[in-house]
Amino acid sequence: MGKGWQSAGAAGRRGGAELKSAGRLLAALAVTLLLAACGTPRDFTVYQQTVGEFQQATDQTATVALEAVRGINAFERDYELKQLREDPNRPLDISKLDSPVLSPAAIDARDGTFRVLKQYTQMLAALADSDAGERWKAASERAKTAAELLASNLAKNSVTLAELPISEALSPLKEISDVIATEIINARRAAALEAAIEKAAPAIQEISGQLREDLAFVIRQRDSVKLLEIAELSIAYGQAQLEANNAARLRLLGEIDGSLTARTRDLATLQGLMQSLDRFDAAHDALVRYAQSDKGPQDLSDLVAIVRSYSATAEQIFESFQKVKEAVS
Amino acid sequence: MPSAKAGKTVRDELFKSFEEMVRKAMRPDIPIPQRQALFNRAQELRAQWMELEAARFNSDADAFQKAQDRVSAAVTDLRVAIEELDDMVKVAEKATKVFGLVDKLLKQAVKFVAL
Image 1 (tube, each protein chain N blue to C red):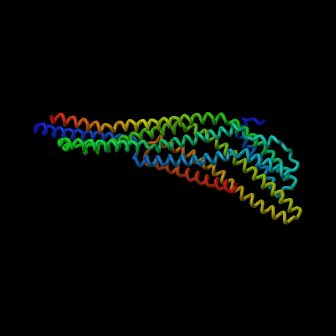
Image 2: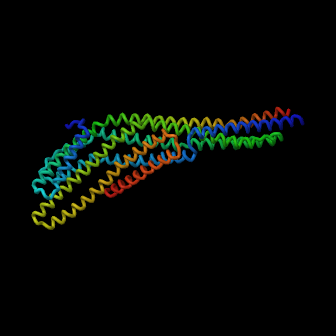
Image 3: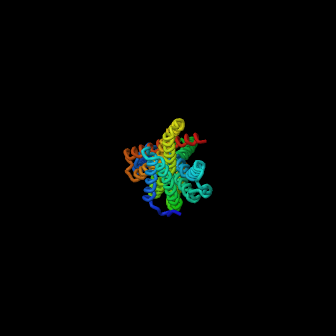
């Protein structure tokens, strides 16, 4: 029995040494995986947050841009009605009032595109923000508690087990396995994000180019009407001068002033939307560049700066459109 | 019906002509009747430009659809990646059972040695 006791003690010490050796091996593996993931856990958190910001900014840009595009038909119809009201001799062309200039299919195509764009950025953010790592840690914590309980029960039944380095072995093993699992999950996640970003890049660029044309169309549609309005007022002003009608002249001057102010404000808001699309392009390009980079601190810092700038512009444009909407309603 | 293929340059030129015309209509050195005529011409140019732009907009649906399909493929990849991560966690959850197994083995080893 005494010999068995000694053997058990030696076996325990050998087991402890083997576990420690295995622990060292696993630690080395964890370091390798950390290097393979090309970044620190903090870097990954920053990357996650940046993808989240990109998603939110794209949601705001898409919402505003789609609303502007959808408004083309209503704006044109309102303009036709205004011309009919102001010009008694204007022929009434019913088709201009009951047939929208843009087909429902073409509007649907934009709807679908914005939907896909939002889905794409939402999935990027969902993958970046997946709680897989946390769920792993929780599962591993539960297993550790169960194992410790088991070890404690065993120790009650056998004094020999008290000499075994179970609690010593469990703790570092758990930490190492957590590090490995988290890094594997993060590395897999980063690789999937990068692959999707690179795959979508050409189509995103194409969509952005087409949306740019649509937004330029919206800007010109709205601004051309404002220019015509100002021209009409300026002609009426000249007429009032010729007729020496001072009251009409002063009233028209006030209207011209109001129209010019409104034009400047509307133009700034619409051009801001175009600027937001420019920043979207720059932010997505930055994501592609980051995906293809060595992911050094400077690469990450460049990405964060570009996405933050996009986010700030998108937020500003979203707010100014909301204000315009509230003012109209 | 305006050609849907009217290029960007044609549409841009037409809009520039409109802008030129409407700006001239604002000039106080031009007599009022001529300014009114310039204004009317600007309105016509705008209507023509609007038709060309609308035709372009209405004909772009196919191009949008193709680009959408390609982005959708990337969305599918992302969905698959999320599912794979979930699967990894399931594997990891199973792996945690190794702790229990190690304990059981130790218990058996001690029993064996104690005999």
